[in-house]
Structure formats: structure tokens, C-alpha cells
Amino acid sequence: MDFKFIVQMIPQMAPALENTFLIAVVSAVLGWILGMVIALIRTNRVRVLARILTVYVSFMRSVPLIIIMFFTYFAVPTLIAYYRVEHGLPVENIAGNTSLVCPIAAMTLSEAAFSSETFRSALSAIPHDQMEAAKSVGMTGIQAYFRIIFPQAFVIALPNMGGLFIGLIKNSSLAYYSGVVEVTGFAYTLASPTYQFLEAFFVIALLYEALSFVFSRLFRILERAFGRYRTGIVLQ
Image (cartoon, rainbow, N blue to C red; front, side):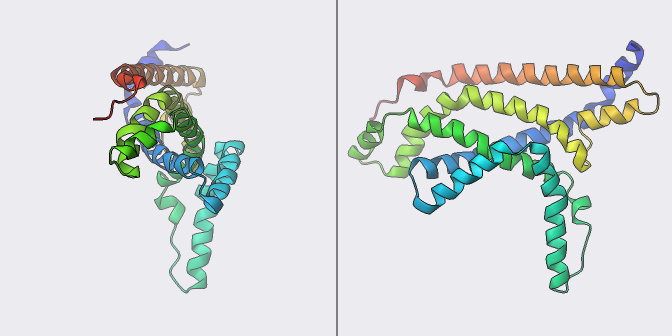
């Protein structure tokens, strides 16, 4: 193993790390927001919409992420181009202009399905009488959710959210197949001229381990910081 190549390679990975971090963070934020909305709809059993979202969650959890990513990168631009041709509009290279958007969209849709189950179980773990108590002191349903239900549900879901985020960091390596230069793709590019793939994969493993360790510690700090909500909130 060429350790000199490894030492030279690590500083060059900064731009790729930025893309990996950007994809993971944006996908997590959007996916968790969408996942919470899905969880609320299914928890409150909104008739038709809840059934549709149940099918959506089941489908997204069953299909490999790479298939969803290929769909957003190839199928969606093709459908858009077909629509533009049918309506006499100019056709552009949509996929080439949105290479970063495609993996983020795919990972957001997938993350929403997985996180919705985490949020749904967290919401179900909170006694229903807390909502009734909130309304009895004059709170609206929205106020009760944001001041009583969501803080407790967030703390309950936080350990699983950390695992989901680390999973997003690892799954960001699939963005290479949609033309995004992230950690895996950039390392492969650096190793290709000299075929030093063993060293490249070693660097990739180190970087993903470092990212996973940092964010695991960060989520543990958040768990301790928000741990006071585990005992419930006293209405005043």
C-alpha cells in the first residue's frame, strides 16, 4: 500500500466532502419534514390520503435507492422533455443541469418514507391525554402539537434519526452514478490514472468512518440536551 499517495490524496478530497455533506444535510432536512407530514397524516388517519401514503411508504422502503436515483436522473428528465416537445417548447439537457438535484430528490423521497415510520412510532408513544390536557387549558391543536407533542416526539425519534442521517451519508456515494463528484466518485477519479484503487478505498473508508463518528457524537449531545422532554411537559 502506497501511504505517500494516501497522504497526498486526503487534502484533495475537500471539494468532494463538501458535496457529500451538502447532499446528506439537504436530503435529511427535506426528508424529515416530509416524513413528519406523512406521519401526521397517517397517525390522524386522513381517509384517502393516509392510504395513498401507506402505499408510498411501503414502495419506497422496498425499492433500492439506486433505482430511485436512476429514475430521478433518467426517467424524470425524459418525461419533462417529452412534455416540452408535445407543447412545442425547446428541449434542454435537464439531467445535465440538475445533476446535484437528482440525488437529493431521490434521497429525500427515500428518507421521507423511512423517517415517517420513525416519527409515526414516536407520535404513537405519546399518551393521547396530553393533547386533551392541552386543549383543556385553551390551546389549539396546532399549539398543542408544537408545544407539547412535537418536542417529546422529537426526543423519542432522535436516536433513530441519527442512524438515518449516517445512512444518508453512506448512501450519498450512489450520487456518483448521476454525475455528482462526491467522496467515492472523486477518490475513484484520483486513483484511475495509477490504478491505486486499494489506497483510494482505504481513504474512502477513513472519511466515512470519520463522518459517522462525528455525527454520532453530535446526535448523542443532542439527545442529552433535549433529554428533559422525556419526563413530559408541565402545562402552565
